[in-house]
Length: 193
Image (cartoon, rainbow, N blue to C red; front, side, top):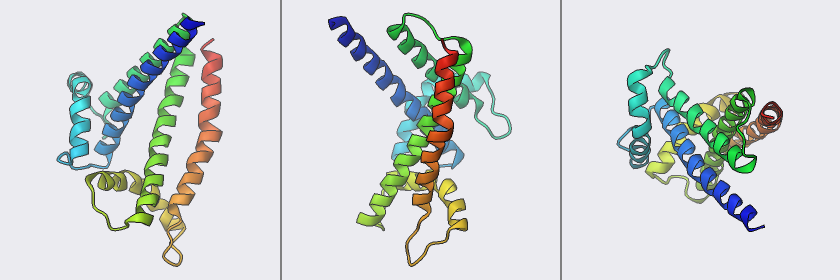
């Protein structure tokens, strides 16, 4: 029974370490897409943490069509390593390749959706408490969420000073979780056996 608790603790630590690094890599990619100022303290920290992995990859894997392929490949590799390590701890085996690819895609997409979910909720709370607050972190959150919220605002304009775009974005994110991410994870679990 003790070994079960020990393996749960190891799984927790492996997931925690990898998930934090994957989150940092995704944020680095998103910050690159929206062209956040690298002098921002948060973006400088993210760049510093991800450079040891991305700098060598960028020397060998160039970007094409405006896409940072080194970041995408590093995300896939780190996520796949996490899935493999957790599977080794739980079952003692490595998932089948097709299942590993499907699970990697599903986990990365889920993390991206969780990032947007968190950012939008925090922005809504900040807009209620202190709408004109300036902070380097809130600036980054605004820059990351604006490409998602702007198209929604074009379809649903604000009414009476209320902006409904965050609510619509949260509904869409949850629908994507239910209709796309959950089926991908189920398929990945089946293929990995």
